[in-house]
Image 1: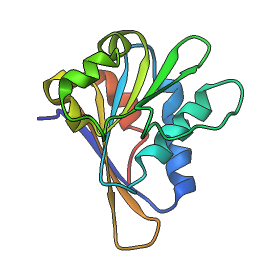
Image 2 (image 1 turned 135 degrees about the vertical axis):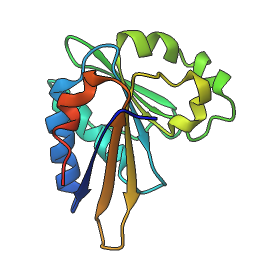
Image 3 (image 1 turned 90 degrees about the horizontal axis):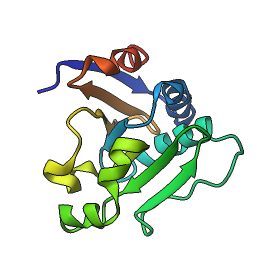
Image 4 (image 1 turned 30 degrees about the vertical axis):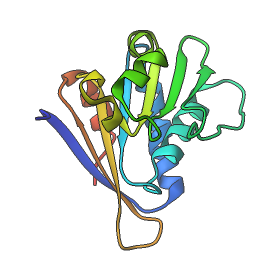
Length: 157
């Protein structure tokens, strides 16, 4: 059970990107953001916005759906953007080198349920869901560690 949580209604893709840009400076090496939600809920859009806010040169940020992992040099830290949708076993995540990345990089992980027990316990969980209004998303953020309180404070209705 998470000890810390927050919620927000995101009314547009731009609002999602703006929130990601506000969160991005708070992320540091060893942080993992677990992005949950159905296809089309905004996980990749959020991850792209975090990456663009942290890298020094704007670049195309492809979805790692087929490559599974894309890495980015953010100067002082490497960012791993992972899409684990196609994994069939948590052991496949180990083959990607995620254990080391969880300790040394910022990891943005889509479909974290594929990690099972390998998911970091101290990560930030962002659960996106689609609501009836077009382009609106509901975001629930939760964490077990007080380390995430400054980030959770940015997420509010």
